[in-house]
Image (cartoon, rainbow over all chains, first blue to last red; front, side):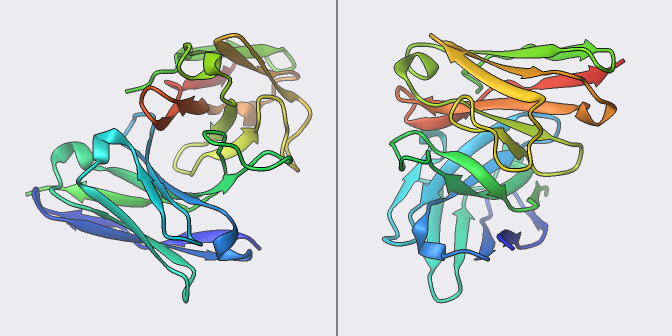
Length: 126
Length: 111
């Protein structure tokens, strides 16, 4: 079945970096974008960025520009998110999610997220 | 920061109908971007409930329906059941922020 499997929980110190992985299976990896999102404890959802697994092209939310890098490995159908200069506000559950487009095709800004990974908790603590 | 506003909570008795509003602006919903809805049970990842304003993915009961008009969208749940207790989020795209954005979230309680 279609699924996204994420790496495990991480504990990092302020100022450090964290690299999370998301392995896709059950569908053709390069056919649709993968997104990264996060949810701080007791808070709502926040979009971080996306990657086109076919080309490697990325797009990031302005809040994360300069601190986040999303990459992919097509040989293992895995995407990675590297977040640097961690601060306490980065403590959250990080999700990867697959893009779903309209039946008529993908349109800019029209992505829904139809398959989600289980999430990975990132704790930032000294 | 959430640019889509939802009521913090709604409640209803079993069998009743509840609606959740999602209010945006001319840079997101009003600009024509699609609205999608998610349900999130405690401790789990969100699940897609409604896509492209009104479409139910396979497996989602027809008790759930979505609509969109102007700068707002709504999710309706009819025949409310205990299992519908969850957090619900709307989602769209904002071209001023150049980002996908979510609503503030609504907790549904079944009385």
